[in-house]
Amino acid sequence: METTTRLTAGEYAAIVKPRASRTGSRFHGVTLVLKVNSIPEVDLTFQFPSWRFLRQHLLVFGFATPKELDDADVRLSTGRQPFLFSCRRWEVPLINALDLNYPEP
Image 1 (cartoon, rainbow, N blue to C red):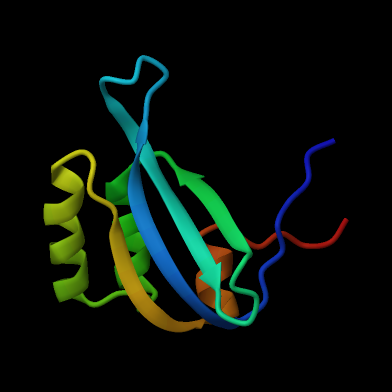
Image 2 (tube, one colour):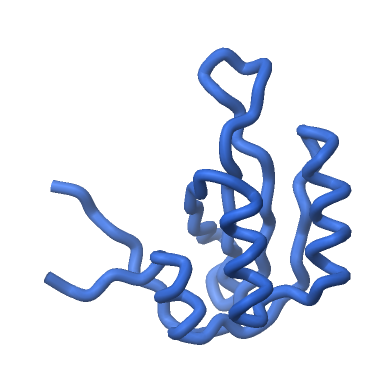
């Protein structure tokens, strides 16, 4: 049985970084790490098939500004540099759009 992580609306900081392939020499997809401000020791990690997919959703739902996304493009293009988005409030529509929030069974 697969478990899912349920996120509530709230303040999160986010880091996006390339995900290494099994061979270690190429990158495949990106990892999004959400840092919960109220519980600093808890990080929530999510995988996405591509930076392009995640970038589009972050822009459309207002999680990141075009300037931040351009800066992230530069950092991620190096293949090793993560990008930290400043802390902000994640709302339920954005979480649902990113498929990070699943209904209770």
